Image (cartoon, rainbow, N blue to C red; front, side, top):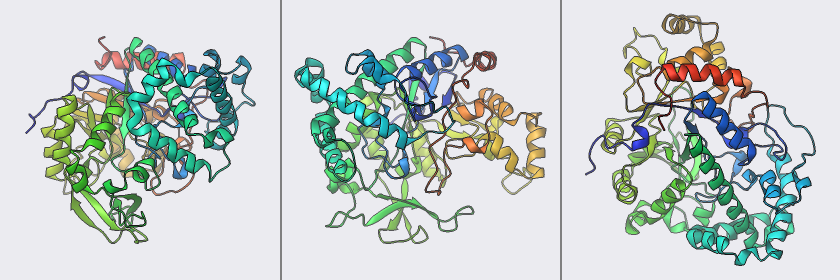
Length: 492
């Protein structure tokens, strides 16, 4: 049995951070349609350093699937190919300097996956050809990368080739080596980004979805680990039951795990998955943590989540296996939803901080449940506080949606109704919680049009993008003062 309160060292300090996916980084030379891992990401880290922010939280970085959602990833191990920086490839000599010239200005505040793919895929094919002609596949660096990642790289490359046959990608995408090459580039550029972050006292926080998409290299490569029928279709789907907000519940559509087979192999797939994630990130937000105690099981042919049941999961055994590999777990537990005492006990036994959402704190305190525990005075020290997450409206949008009574409660508590996003940022950074994370949209005070995701909405999500002038020096100066006064500056 793990000892209680054995928190990871990076979770023991008082820190402040920002939630921003790399695709939301602003437009610049060589970054068309989406942000990427290149100079723009390193400049953002420089801005974080000036602001005193020491935690950069991202959404999942795997290859996106349906709806371009980072939570419908095509692999638990590979990185999204469109995150490759063309500007860095030109700097490294795999492309001519002219390749980084952007074909148009796209500083619109919206990301475009289609524009990025049309512009970037031909560039990547040219870089692949240059690498091949230079005998890069025989280089020590590439061979070292291939050996270290062979357990998933071959599987992903074969899966990506099959998918490319269904679309309109270039001829290079029919070669498994092309997809291995892209992952090699991403591995190099990620290492450069992480090293730069260390020089600014910034640590990276990843996001680990608990489930895998049915259309993924994971399911295709190891179907015995998932609950599928003989033709490969899921027999049991993931989701959430109906509640006050969703009459039909939420049907996510991912297959459930065949836990007996995971046990039989000593959770080796999970252990490889977590090690690969920790090769890229310093800390990891574990999505849907309640699924490590119980998960809602929906029949594979169900049209919605109204018909389902809760099934037990071996989360304690799994977390113990992971702890045996890495020591104190560097996890932030997304313990939102149907939290039971068993979920809380599991989280506490492994020393994992839970989450608090400030937007949920302003219900009527005279109700049967009393004041909300999402208000700062109730935040445990071992917790992570957010004004809102990627699934919430921005604070400015949330404020506009409040009824008169809720607005009055907020004003009474926060003391200011003229700048609700700034007030929420102050409440987050002055909370007792050791870790405080604020969405970039809320640091900028943006409205609902900047919202990242609306749960249950199939299209139009994941497209918000910063404008070039957003990460201003005046904003970093104001934030630095607040972070210093709330005791969250990095200590080195």
